[in-house]
Length: 232
Image 1: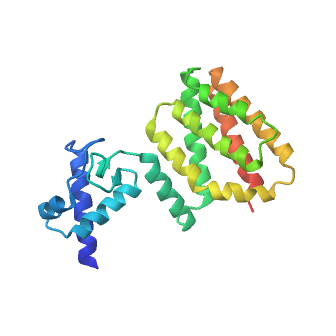
Image 2 (image 1 turned 90 degrees about the horizontal axis):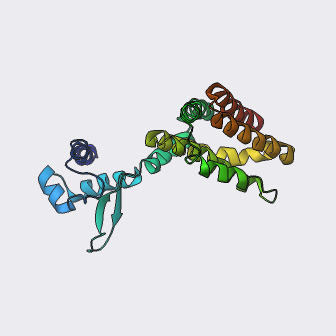
Image 3 (image 1 turned 45 degrees about the horizontal axis):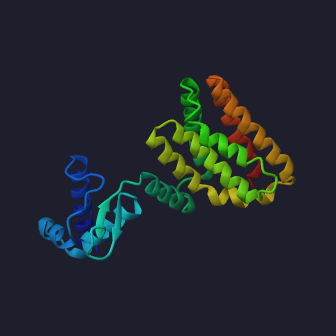
């Protein structure tokens, strides 16, 4: 087993170097199993294991067959791997929900501060559309929370910072089940949803006005307030 693990790591480390040094990049196809196995002196099963890890991490997309889309192609989907890792670690209780929430607050405070400092109405158009969609009284609580998640991700996307967006997506995914289960602890959803709508609107208004401090306060209070309400 130890030998298999070392061989798998050998393949992964090799591919990491190839990516880091620019010999492989998005859109490139990884060398075939046979070629990598021969080049690195490992079994083909070790190559397959390394490629599976890269697939789960969102670094490659794999497809069977013999056409131009077959094999393992580098696609670099950072959010996919981040979401999977954070979700599994949270489920395994390696990351506590309170720590995930605190990290999310720190990140979103940075997001809205960045947006307020250099306001661009065009970049925030998706967030405004989601805000309008959340005004629909026919939405179920689960539907509203799904739009709420997309709203916060739209803010992160508006910064143009792909690392922020990937980490945000991972954090949201990590506590998605916790957020949905917490609905049973809300006594009056109509009161809660009205408050959440008002907080979203106040947040966007502060960003649009360039009031960075007010935007940071809005988003921190918004997140902490909701999680205090659903905490067991």
